[in-house]
Length: 290
Ligand code: R5P
Image (cartoon, rainbow, N blue to C red; front, side, top):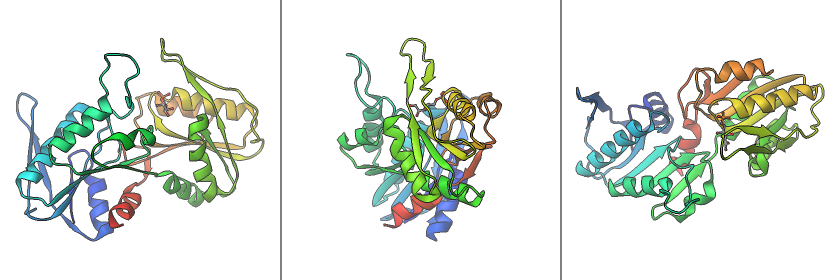
C-alpha cells in the first residue's frame, strides 16, 4: 500500500504513512498563472494499492479538483486499486434531492471520483452516514469521536458529561461517554430554512458542578456550539469544552464559543486548523490496515 498525501492533507498523509509503516509517494502541486492546478505524482505506482489522502474542506472546489487529478494520474501510472481517504467530504451534506431540480451533490462527487478511477472512499464523521449506502462504489464512514474522547481523558476529564446535538447525534455522545464514563445527553437544534439561524432547545440538563464536553461534527460559524455552551453554562456546569471533528472555523467562531463560556475549542486535523489537537490518522490507519 502506498500513501499519497494531497496538497490539503500533507501532515495527515505523513502521519498515516508512518503509522502504517508504508511507502509514501510525494505529490507535487503548483498553480498555473491562470489559477489552474498542476499535479505530478513523484514515484512508481504500478500494480500498487494507493491511498490518496486529501481533505476537501474550503476551498472545497479547488481541493476536489486536486483530488480528481491525483486519482486520474494514479490510474495513468498503472495503480492496481485507488482508495480515496477524504476526512472532510465536501458536498456530502446535500445527500438527497430535497426540492425538484436540485443537484444531488454527494452523488455527483462520488460519480466523478469513480470516473477518475477511485474504487473506495473512506471518510470521517460524515453528516449523514446512512446516505452513503446508495452509491455505486463503497463509501465507508469512520468515527473520530473516540479519539476526541481520549484526548479529553488525557486532559483530566474522566467522568465529564458528553453532550451532543440532535437525536441523531445522541449516538455521538453515547460513543464519547463509553470512554469518558460520565453519562450523556443531547439537545435538539433547529435551523430556520429561510434565514439559516439556529435555535438550541433549552432543556434541563444534569450538569450542575460537572465538567461537560459538547460534541458536534462540524463547527463553522460557531453559532450552534456557542448557543449550546451558553445553555450548559446557565445550567451551572463547572467547566465546558467544545469539541468537533471538522473545525471549519470562520474567523470569529472560536472567540464566539469561548465568550459563551467554553474553556477550550478542540477539533481534529480532518480540517487542519489552530484548534486541531487530535489527529484522525489512527482511525484511518486502523481502517486501512483491516
Ligand atoms: C449541522 O447539522 C452540523 O452538525 C453543525 O451543527 C453545524 O454545521 C454547525 O454550524 P455552525 O457552526 O455554523 O452553527
